[in-house]
Image (cartoon, each protein chain N blue to C red):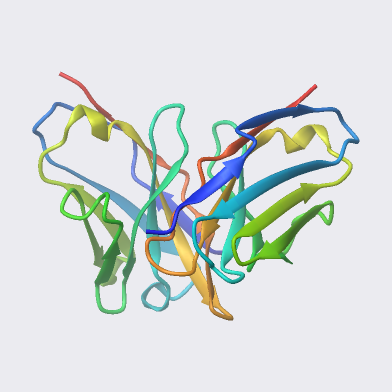
Length: 107
Length: 121
């Protein structure tokens, strides 16, 4: 099965900062990569699909990029409400595995 | 409005059976796959599998194949996740979600609120 590895495992940043999270696939998955946000005690929420397409209603400060085996989620101008854990997920083939998550804390 | 409403929290003993539910509304149940995701306490998301309500076709993660069963009842727009014999390691939050596939990409677009399952003697 194709594995997804996220980095960093956790990070701390200040309001207004630019934050980048990386997701690496063990094999080429073209652009079949999604990003989700999970706030504490809540169900996950879809942010980005097909590597770089912004889900409707998601603020434009969230941006996805990449293809093949390396992908990034960038949050520009970090906001307090962005406190959450972020997960990548592949949809290239079943199983649609998630990465292990990146916990984002606000300083 | 698309909604997925899951059944309430469960506390069970090892060896017991369990079925949790995910009732959907606001769209045609038979036209979208339903996915199940496990989240063990303090851990990340694990993709368990998907089931297509139109024909009950199921696709399981190898990690969960044979451990759980996904099913649907089209008459009441409800998907189920079932265990025959629970273990303590099944203690987790379980989410259902509607899967949308477009342009070759599939996403879990709408989520239920989660069902907490605790297995303890």
